[in-house]
Length: 333
Image (cartoon, rainbow, N blue to C red; front, side, top):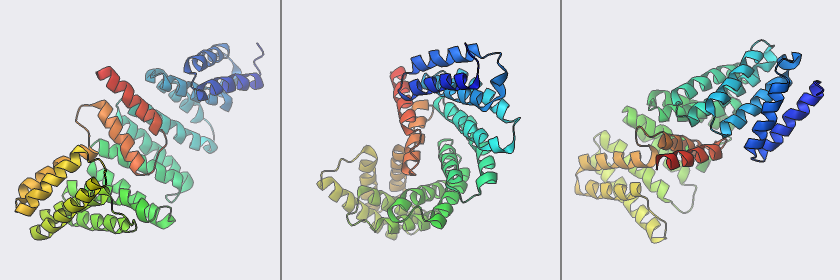
């Protein structure tokens, strides 16, 4: 077989096409043969070999062979780290792909460490105001949330919001999700005044929508809990009553209410009766059902990570994450 770079490149491309079609077994065979034929080739330090390693790693990842995928990614990293600075973007990209592998196998702490390394590289290359850097910050915020590191989650979400406002790539309705998420983080930390201010901002962003939705009522309920935690219980009672009325209207329009919203309705009732302690416990339980996952369940944590990314408008890898959740749930059952 001719071992020229052109032949090598055509083999990689054939494997890539099979991968993009979803023919992972076929792609695995093509790329395994390519790796074997060129195992002692002098071109192993070329970028085409890095490309081969990257494609093959993705195939292994799709087949849930995470150890093999990580081995290939690290091999590509070792080649790139000996090259010039121009390859640093590729290094960051590989680190992020390694992070995905760690997520899919439930190692969220390791995933966050790789994303942190990628962020340092991308920040130096593009600067803090780039969309590429902001995408990395979003993933770090979500991973910190999953790891229940709310202090770090607040730092990353605040950076994301500053970028969003400065670049004006998020306005009005699109600002609701990051603002309300940051408000929830501050509530969990115990920063009730900051939480109140952010929930108020989220409600203001929501006002642009002519027809109020159930999400608006949930934010109102969370705002009420922040206010109640500061001792302004009558004001909290009013907000919770309004939230209950809005959810009732949504239900009348035929919208399905999930379990968390039913619990919020009960919490509203306790607020109206003046039993704020019970209301607060119920609201925190509802928030847990809506945004958190049961501890110890890797599938549910992965699902939470996927949902958080979706809320923040970062849909890359969502399908792969959702597919992995389904696989894990099937294994568990």
